[in-house]
Amino acid sequence: MTDTEEPVLTVDDVRHAFGDLTVLEDVSFSADRGSVVSLVGPNGSGKSTLLRIVAGLIEQTGGEVTVAASADRPVGYLPQTPAFRPQFSLAETLSFYGDLAGVDVDVDDRLRRVGLQNVPDRRVDALSGGMTRLLGIAQATVGDPPLLVLDEPSSGLDPVMVEHVSAVVDDLAGEGTTVLLATHNIDAVEQMADTVLVLDDGTIVAAESPTALRERTGADTLTGALADVIERDETASVSVGQRGGAE
Amino acid sequence: MSDGRLRQVRALAQRELDAVVRTRTYLVLVTLFGLAVASVPALGGAGGYLPLVLNLMTPVEVLVPVLAFAFGYQAIRADAERGELDVIRTYPVRRATYVLGVFLGRATAVLAAVLVPLALAATFVPLASQPAPSFLASAATVDDPIYYVRFVSITGVYAVVALGIAVAVSTVARTRREGLALAVSTLLVVVVGLDLAVVGGLTTGVVGPDGLGAALALSPASAFRGLVLAFAATPVAGASAPAPAALPSVVGLFGWLIGTLALATVTVWRA
Image 1 (cartoon, chains in turn orange, blue):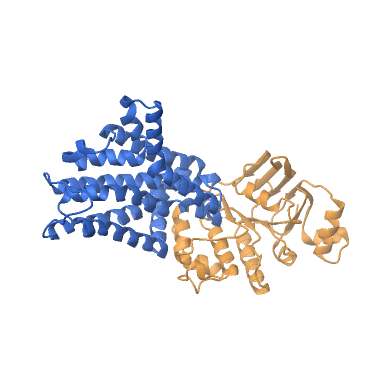
Image 2 (cartoon, rainbow over the protein chains, first blue to last red):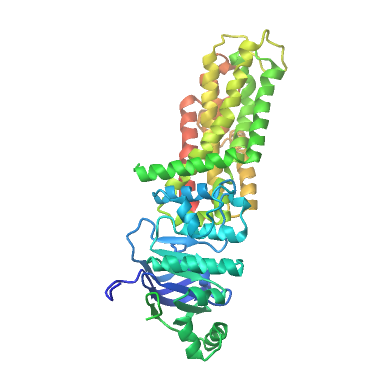
């Protein structure tokens, strides 16, 4: 990537309120191609709302979200609780989404990437929660969107599965896909994220790499560092760099 | 429509059809409907196509909307409740494309569920050796299979219109419970409520005798009845209860279809 390449995602001064309740306040950041940005924060801090705004599912009250992409499907989305029509197999489900994206999906390849290659004909209602989440990630990549928005991709997964999801996200980023994800799993953040965006009470209070955040706060662990910045309630407007760390 | 849109509509419709075929509840409903339709010529005798039309008209007027609502009232609501509608929205799918695909898939299933039993019921007519005296309606007049063919065709239109209303309900309701309540109340309005409203309007003078036909055509059930009497029971139409004329009935039914699908299209992304 060159320095002149524009960010894949630009969130500029975004505000959002549900009636009188403000859930996001002046949120600004950008993410370059191939970066993994992890959104962390306490319950109710506005993470899922921000992800839904970026995915185009909610129109923000103010500010602007720009996804610089010419793809037919600019944003792939994994909801917090992915679910699919129970009567269909994994292969049928991915083929259906391929038709919506206007592409012929290589089902075997998509399932192999998320580790579900052995169960293409299994019905969706026979999947475990973790496997459904993996199918959700496979679905999110259909149409090769340049930006993936993943809401809790590692929630409810065992440590082996978390490792696996981290590897999938790493691969996708390595291929140039920008990933914006929200998670409560701090281990997953350590494994996956180039940059951590800490959201507290609707505002970004820190934005840097996990290592930089730990060093700056002097905390031994990322959990400690997050607790520290949320307590300090700093605010930041940031540009998130390429894979390898924040700018 | 572009190839891409056509592919999306086909995929959405096929998904709906497959979902219906693979769901046991729907198969039970289809079987019950089939038994109900078959019981009419079996119990009442199939002394001819015209008597069969007259015997089936009222049960079909009530049962077809029930079946169509059962097939359609959760069609979009279920996708929304599961969160899958959000996922679909991240694909380049227009809301009208989504509604059309869902509607066409469910309509194919409903039409099969309604028309096949009606077609099978017609086989009772040539098979019956003698017309059985019946407590149901009978008509000793000119008989012709074309009356029955028209009846089945009009019933197909009626089923599709009822399904359109059900699909609109599935986009308006926000929860499963709300969807069920809205479906039941809308069904009652469609089957009897609008007719009662017209009767009420007639007795209070709001609807005059001249406007009765047009007012009745606003009710899908009355419009169905009007079309059946106009085209499928022509020889006995004059002896029946008041019914709207053919043209207002056609306008009424297609108005409901277009109006409800337009409502579904407008409201679907907020479902």
